[in-house]
Amino acid sequence: METRVINEIIDYIVTTWLSGDARGFTEQTDLQASGILDSFSTLALVAFLDERFEVQLDPADVSTDSFRTVSAVADLVKGKLSSAGT
Amino acid sequence: MMRLDQFVSAWAEYDPNHVAVEGVIEKITYRDLDQLADRFARLFLRLGVRKGDRVGVHMPRSGRTVAAMLGALRAGAVYVPLDPGSPPARIALIAKDCGIRHVVISPVLLSSWLASGVTSPVRHFVLSADGPLPAVDQDAAIHRWAEVLDESAERLEPPSHNMDELAYILYTSGSTGVPKGVMLSHRNAFAFIEWAGNQIELHHSDRVASVAPFHFDLSIFDVWTSLWVGASIVIVDETTVVSGPRMLERIRQRNISVWYSVPSALILMLDQADLEAQGAPSLRAVYFAGEVFPMKHLRRAMRALPQAKFWNLFGPTETNVCMAYALPGVPSEEDQTIPIGHPSCGDQMRVLDDAGQPVKPGQMGELFIEGPTVMVGYWNAGAPLLAKQPYPTGDMVSQREDGAVMYHGRRDHMVKVHGYRIELGEIESALLLHPGIQEAITMVVGQELVAVLVASDPQLSILQIKQHCAAKLPRYMIPSDVRPVASMPRTTSGKIDRVRVKQDVIAENEARAKAMTEARAAARGTK
Image 1 (cartoon, each protein chain N blue to C red):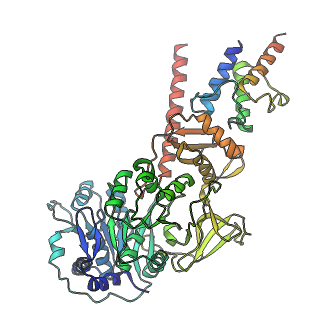
Image 2: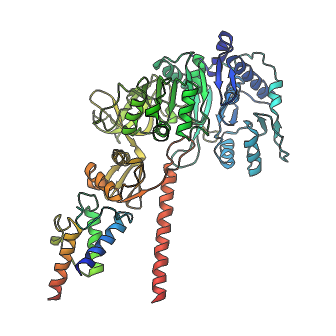
Image 3: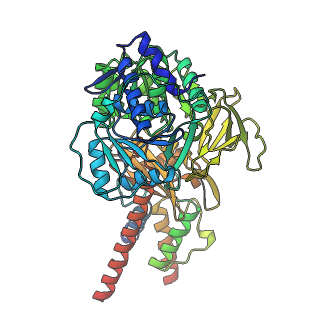
C-alpha cells in the first residue's frame, strides 16, 4: 500500500513537472528546494491526491513540511486513509 | 561626412591593387571594385533605374555583391539586400512592398525564383555570373553577366551630395513575422561607420571578416566601415558560418584581424573548434551584438583571445548601433551580466517609465534613442512611417551607479504568469549559469512557463535543472515545463529563432494532447 502510494505520487510528479525524466528523483527529494512545488503546483498535487486516492486535504494539512517530500505526502495520504477507514 | 557611394574611388587611386573583398576563391581589388561598381551603375541607368529607385541584390556574399550594392548607390538608387536563404515567396513580398523593378541575382536563385511562379514587380533580372539563361514566359528581361562587363567603367558623376537620401532598406521580420522595411539614409549609415571605425582605429591594413548576411545590419560595419578606411573584407561564407572548425580555420588562414558577429558564432568556435587551445592570434578586435552573450562563454572567448579587444554593441536595426560597451577585461565570476554601456555614434538616450517619465538610476524603464543613427522610418508599402525621435527601442534597461546601462530584455518579453511580472531574459540568464546548459529560451505557453534548452551534458536531469533554478530564482520564475532539445532552430542571421522554438513547443503540446485524447478514447473503447 505504502509503496503503491509513493510510486503513484512519484509518477504523477515526474510526468507533470519533470517531463517524464525520473533521473535522480526519489521519495526523499526536497520538492521545494528542487523548484517543483510552488503554490500553484501544490494545488494541482492536492487535486491529484483527491482524485486518485479520494483524500480531501484541509488547508491546514497543506504545509511546507507535509509537502516537503513525496514520503511526507504519502504519510499524509496514508494517515487520511486510515482515519477515514476507522 | 561622406555618402557611401563616394567611399571607394579614392582608395582605388591611392592603392589600386589592395584587396577590397576576398571571397573563398576570388579576390577583387579596389580598382576592380571601383570599376565594376561603375559598370553596374551604368547598366542600371540604361535599364531605367531612376534616382531613389530600389534595386534588389539577391546573391551570396562576394566582391560582386558589394559591387552591385555600390553600383546601385552610384546610380542614385537605394539598395535592398535580399536574403539568399529566404524562400522566393518572401522575397517577392519584399519586392512588392518596396516596388523593386531591378534585381541583381545569382543564376541559381533566379532559377528557383522563376520555378516558384511568384509574381513580383521585378522587370529586370541582372545575372551575377555566367549561366544558362532560363527560358521563361513572363514580362521580365534577363540580362547576362556579360552585359555588366560590356558597360564602360568610366567614372560617373556623383548622383547627389544629399546625406539625407536613402542608402538602403533592411527588411526585418519584427515580432509579427511580417517583413518591415527599415529605411536608412547615408547620414544614418555614416554616423555609425565613422564611430565604429574610430573606436578600434580601423586601418587600411586590417582584414575584416564578413560574417553576417548583407540583409542583417551587422554587415553595415563589415562592408562599409571597411571600404571607408580602405581595409580588406574577408568573406566568411554561408557554409562556413555554420561550422566552428571552418570559421576558426578561415580566421587563422586568412589572418582576419577584426570580427563582428552574433555571440552564437563565437560560441560555435568555442564548442566545436577548441578556440581555447588553438587561439586566433591575428584577431585584434571583436565586436559582438544581436544577442546576450552568456557570461561563461564570453569569459572563455576572452581568455582564448587575450590579445583582442572586445566590444558589446547594441541597437535594433531601426537605430543601428546606438549603445556600446568596451570590455575592460575578462568579467569576474561574480558578474552575471555585462552592460550595453553608453550611447554611441552621437546618439542620446533616455530611460522612461510607462508614463513617459525618466526613471531614477537603478530603476527599469524603456530605452529611447535620439540622434543621427535613428532610421528615417519604415517603408510601409510606399507610405513611409517616419520614425519618432526619440525612438522607443522596446528594450528594457536600467542605469548603474557608474552610469553604464544594463539590458533587461525586450519589453515584449515581459510576461505575466499567475499575476507575477516576469522578464524571460532573467530566467534564461539564470539557466545559462549552469555549466551543463548550452542554450536556453523561455516562453509562456498558455499559463505555463516553458524553458527549452540545449544541454551539453547528457547526464543533466530535469530535476537538476529545476534545483539549479530554485537556487537562483524566486519560485514564481522557475519554469514548470523544462524541455531539452538537441539543437535550436536559427534565423538566417544566426540568432536563435524564438518564433520557431515556440511554434515547436505548441505543436508538441498539441501532439501530446491528441495522443492523450486518443489513449482515453481507446481505454473507453476496450471497456
